[in-house]
Structures are given as C-alpha cells and as structure tokens.
Image (cartoon, rainbow over all chains, first blue to last red):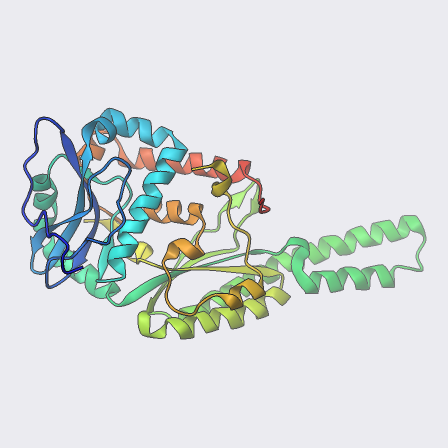
Length: 278
Length: 82
C-alpha cells in the first residue's frame, strides 16, 4: 500500500490521442491523499480510480472515462443495455465500497460524468460546507437494508388457520363445506394482509431504535400485489452493527410466525442517507 | 453479466445465515446484483455532471433504467438455478 503511486493529486490534462471525461465515484474525507493502489479497477474501459483534492481534507475519487464509451452517444448506448448498466453498477459499487471501508464517503449516483477534472472540482469546491455536513452525519456508520415480504402460503399462523378450517368443516356437506372454506380463506387472507402490515410497522419501529437514522421507501407492488411489505434502510454506527444484526435476527423469528419473510443486506456505504443534490 | 445473475436472491435459510462470518463484509457478498443496481442507480448524491446533463434529462434516464430493471425482475425466475 505504501508503495502505491499517488498519481492524480493534480488535475490531469487531456491528451488528444485518448479523449476522456472524468467519472466520479464518490467524495471521501481523509487527512492524507487516499491510497487507491488496491482499489478495484472500476468501470469497464475506464482508467484506474484516482483521488482529486477538493481541499479541507476532502477528495473526489475519479477515473478517466474514454469518450467513445462514456461520451453522449456512448452513454446513450450504455443506458439502453441492461448488461452494460449492470457491469457499470457493480464496478461503481465496488469502488465506493472499497473507499467506504477506509474513510467516510458520500457515494455518488451511477454515471456521474464531467467533461474534465476541472469541471468536476469546480462543481464541488463551492459546496465544501454542505459536503462536510453530510459526511458528519454518515461518518463511522453503515447502511443496512431490511426488506420484508409475505412468505409463500402465509407462514405458520395461516397454515394453522387452514388446518382449523378443514377440521371444523369436516362434517358439512361438500357444497356447504366448499363455500365455508372459501369464506374462511378470504378472511384469513384479509387478516394476513393487515397483520403483515402491522408486523412490518412494528419491525421498522423496533429496528429504528437500534439505528441513528431510518428510512422507508414506499412499498413496491407488482401485478397489483405488494411485492415488498417493507423496504427500509437503517443507518447504524459501526460500533453497534452486531447489536443491530442481533435485533434483526430476533425480529426475523418473530415475523416468520406472522407470515413475513425478512431479508437483511449490508453493510452498504450510506447510499440512502446522502441522497439529494450537491 | 449473465441474465441468471439478475434474479432477486431468495431469503437465506437460517443455517446458511448462521455459518456466515460476523465481521463486516463487503455488501457484494450479501446482496444480489439487483440490490447493487438499485443502490447505485436510485440513491446516492446527485452531482449534476455536465456529460450526463448533456443527455437531456437525468431523471428520464433513471426512469428508463428502472423500468428496464423491473422487467428483468419479472422475467427472471425467483427460484435459484444451479
């Protein structure tokens, strides 16, 4: 790491032979020049990630993005191609995650490009105060994603309700039994949906208690049915990460009985807690 | 990037979760490709870059991409394949 060449601490001049734009991954706060010798390679076709000094201990992590690939026409091609977007997203995420493991970062959205280092710096230099404040909010914290969806078949409580219904209607005639089972099934589904919503709300409250900040995104529905009952992000200090994960584990068991399946992702760089414009 | 990788990963079984190391891990290990794309596309700071701005409306680009992603999520099977 110490042998890593600290290139790019000064804005680079473009050469006519390989015209490129400046791709920006994230803003990093670091007293010294961030060392990126072991950083992932970054976007396909782009140069190695390198730091650009904003001043006051802030750095842009950027890379040269060749214009044939990342100029206007190239980008228009990229955004139409899901595989190309995926490759960019994974590469972007890897570089940001690498930086986030070492210093506080503000992750930028995918495909943020400037025509030159100077233009990128000019854009953020006047906003150092706002950048510093946002970094303060997320420093030494990581983002965790928690998603809850309805378990297939509705979980143990729904299975119990179906078993009870079958048992209690066993003596009815076939036609009456069919109608009665249908009625009860509708009730179970209705209870399940409202129960799941309440369970998700209490899950969110419980986990927010272990976090410094929490965000909920509106539930996504697919084909008219809610795909996710809860789509939440939690900003948790690194010191309390184990505690948070234990809380999720405890809630997972409780929620499973109420027909909810919970999924935890993370630790992420604080993507959901820096959103907005700079 | 094969289309196969684009499925949302189903919830992990308790056994698999238990075997996982406790130490912090890069998100890439715990998250599906769609999670990653979702994070870097729809969240994060927007710094109006001049090249992207040249593409007319940034948000329009993101809208088109998220439509694309929803389609991918629908098309790919939920169950894991080998």
